[in-house]
Length: 435
Image (cartoon, rainbow, N blue to C red; front, side):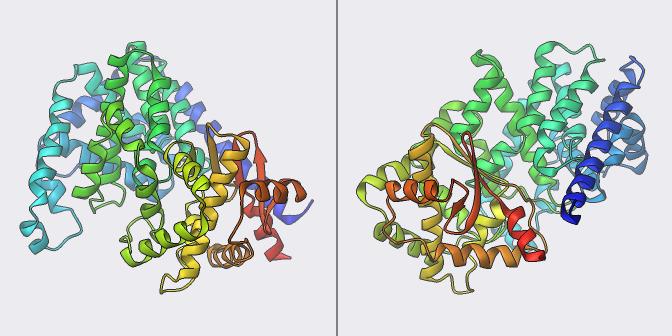
């Protein structure tokens, strides 16, 4: 057995042991749910203008010792999110502005802050309109939303949903309330993925529809999801508010299915602009975007444009491969034509694959996330491979190429094809590098 296999097995074992330990801690608790209710009541009554005390943090840990299994950075994030949620529901909107990483001059001169406060007030009023049990559920989600981040980070939402279901099993909340909590945790990163161009609005609509066939419940779920997601984003970097006015404004557009359906119509342009950024906080480079539009016109026929737009609007979702996508913008510091060409070659590949093999839904992912010390190597390797892809590459030529390579290589980029998934097999590249 190779060292690589041993390392992977040890890592998987370690994660599974932590998940098992969390389940054991939750299941071993007494049936009495009153300590949880007492904690939530105490959180709700904290002073509006003061940070959460160390005493409160200790009480959170005593009530939910499974949170101590989180890595330190994630642990700090959880308390930052609790802090922002407390400020929202207590009406302390200035806290959001004061913690934005901007200069005082920018904060006082920016007219968009009027809309920012208005949007925060809308979320605040939605919370105020909830029943007491529903308010408690939102607090519980806030405290436990990342409880599943003790295994592979990519799976933390699914694991978190499973663990919060165990927590709620001993509560007297209604089935609807429990479903709200479980599914908000399960889908809490979806709005952010849509906003970043990773997922389509259609994927969020499907998530909403999977919860219930009742429109009233779907609307309530959307409100819970957006209230929590915005607070999760605010506390993304402990001590600094990542919920900027433009990010909040975009999330407000996800409050119901009708708005999401309207976004679907021309989403492909928006998502390509977002995905052309070097990272989450980087600005969009307009000169680079113009080069991308130029490459679209040069590389895609009219027939291809039709399904290129369709699949980027509705059917292609990206998951756990953002470092790979962002690497396409980093061939050199000048955001060259070659970089723009490789960017469009990659997305043309996704669209052609979706058209050939599963037109209704395709998930593009990676089996190695996140890329850390291996990042520069992967960046260079993938861009080098994309240079080999012919400029005039039709979907029929793509099919011929993939079948010739047993569906496991795209111009030397190792891939796996499974059902409706196209997976970048980055582990193989990293293994080759070590040899």
